[in-house]
Every structure is written in C-alpha cells, then in structure tokens.
Image (cartoon, rainbow, N blue to C red):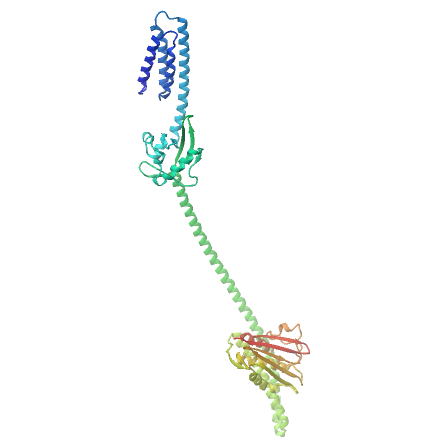
Length: 499
C-alpha cells in the first residue's frame, strides 16, 4: 500500500481532468493534461507509484468517451485517445528513466563512506548524506538549513567565511588546507580531525558546492601511533648507538692502553739494551783508560822512592807532576761517568742565579793551567755587561769540558781563545782552537754518546764529554754549535740566558 501524502492530491487532480475530458468539446483533447500530471510522479519516492499512476490515467483516458454525447465522431476520438496513450506511455518511461537515474545518484549519496554536503552560495546546507550524520552527530533534518560555519570550530569561523567568499568568486575542485590539520565541530561540541575537498555543482539555474568530508580520527590515531613508534625507534637507535660508541670507546682505550704498554715495554727494552751497551762500553773503556794512569802512577811512585834515596829532586818533581796529571785524568773520567748517571736518572736541574762571566772564565783557566802543553796559552776576552742569569755550576762544567778538549787536541805553542759577550741578559761564548778539527761527515755525531772522532789518535777520552755538554746546555735552555775543519781547528759557540 502506498504511504505518501502526494497520492490524494494526485487522485483529485486526475478526477478533475477526467471531468473536464467528459464535458469538453470533441475537438479539444483535454486528456493530454494527464501527461504533465504523470510527469509529476518523478517527485514521489515510491517506484511503484509511477506505474500505478500510468495505469490509472490510461483507464480514465479510455473510459471518458463512454460518458460523452452520442454525436461524437468515432474516428476523431480514437485518434485523440491513441495520441494521448502514446504520450502517457512516453511520460511513464521518461519518469522511469529519471527515477532510476535519481535512484543511482541517491545510492551513491546514501552508501558512500565519505560525508557529502550540498551547500549553496550563502553557505546554507541543502542536503546531507548519512555518512555526514555519523561524522557530525546531526540528523538530516537538523543539518538542512544550517550554515557550513556551524560545523567549524568558533576560532576558525571568521577566517572561513572570508575563504568561502573567495572560493565563490573562482570555483574549482580543490582540497582545503593542504598540509594543515583541519577540525570540524560536532553537535556535542567536540572536535574531530577531518579532510575536506570542494567541488562546484550546477543545475543550470542554481550553483552549489559539493563538500566532501572524511573523518580523519582513525588516520590521526594511526599517525600518532606511527610517530610514537618512530620516536621509540629513534630512542632505541640512539641508545644502541650510544652503547656502541661506548663499546668502541672502551675498545679504543684498551687498544691505546695496549699500545702504550707496548711502547713502554719497547722503551724499557731499548733502555735495557742501552744500559747493557753502556756497561759494555764502560767496562771496555774503563779497563783501558783506568789502566794507563794507574800504571803511570805506580811506576812514578816507584821511581820517586828510588830518586829519593839518590837525592835527585828534579826527577822527583817531574814524576810528581806526572802523578798529578794521571790523577786529573782519572778524576775527569770518573766525573764524566757520574755526570752521565745523574743525567740518565734526571737528577740534574738548573739552579739559576747571577753569574759573573769574566770571573768564571778566569777560574776555569786557573784550574786548567796545569793541563796546557808546552807553549800553549789560554786567552780570554770579554765585552758587554759582566753578569747575567744562569747556573754557574753547570756553566763551569761546560767551559771546563770545552777548554780542556781544546787543550788536549791542539798542538804545542798554540793559542786557545775564549771570546764572551753579554748583551740584554744573553751571553754568547766562543771557544776557538787550532787543533786537529773534525771532518764534515762526523760533525753530525759530535754530541752523541761515546762518540770519538776518527782522527783523535792516541789521545785519551771517554767520548762522553760533548754528550754531557749538550745535555747541560739543554737544561739551561741554550744552544751549542760547532764550526770545524779537519786539521785547522774548531770553534764552539755557546748561547745562554734570557730567563
């Protein structure tokens, strides 16, 4: 049974046309009025109503001539009725086609999971889909007549009205707020994240806007979960990376510790080898160097005893001097080894005080005068200030070594010249001799331990003197250099001061 308020008005209008058809003249085909009446069934939602209406108006068209006067022309009346019948059938099929088209459109409208809103230019909602009702919590009747701004949070409404006005001026399909978070307002006042797209729609006389709304809550939760998961993964990666870095750091420390241990072991091994070499050299040198002066002392003592019995003072004096010279050689050798030991142990440090350089040079000359050979002279010349800051004890040992070497390796009747200069707190000392000199190839080894030049001949020595001198100069923060030529002598230059 049809349940619609449009059925009764349709029946009444149909009966009215039926009455007009009966009383109208034959030349007037009033039955054609059933066609527009049938077309109005398009607006009745029930599919069967169009069929029932077609059968009903066809019946009224067929029985109307029975109630007309007897003088009707049958041929004319049949033609009019056939024309009317064809028009009614055509109208039925037109209504049916339109109905099916509307039905398909409504199926899409009602079944789509995307919310649909039909909005006019003023922003008033004309129609809505069931998916929209679920998103916003309204019924269809509640949504129709509301403005689109009613579905937007209050803080965005003024701005949205401005955007809607601009869109009406240039309507084209587009997404709203690309890359932004959009929110819609539900009936209960809560906000829901949404994605919105717009598309213009026109019926020919009126323009509308189709609004496509997608509830983004699930996607938002998924994105939030993904962000949380990503953040958790990043934290785990950072923790693992930190742990790995710590492990690498520990391994590097272990490797460095092992390398340092290996280096220390190598240094200890090198030190042990050096000490063994030093001991070997010392034993070899000491057995040779100590034997000669001791033998000389012993023989001179025996001769002195013999000459004493014979009362020969001149010979006694000569052998006494020989004993003194031998003792000085022994003292020098022992001094070198003692100094080397202290240097190796790092027990020698500078003690800075004011040094009167001319007096110190004279003191050294006085101590070494008994070492000079026949006709040798040690000449000292000084210019500039007399005093500067240094370690007098270390400087004295340096000068003793340089000057005694000059005496030892210079011929008789030659001069050893000491030139010194003090200027602005810095001292420069030159020790010049005319002795055997040093070859260019051997000068690079001059300050090495146990080094002795190949041209020293039978002159006694430990090979430690210049090595000790170089270390003393380093302790004083100075420099020492040598200019020499084999057979023509050497010139040592010492620069100190500036503390």
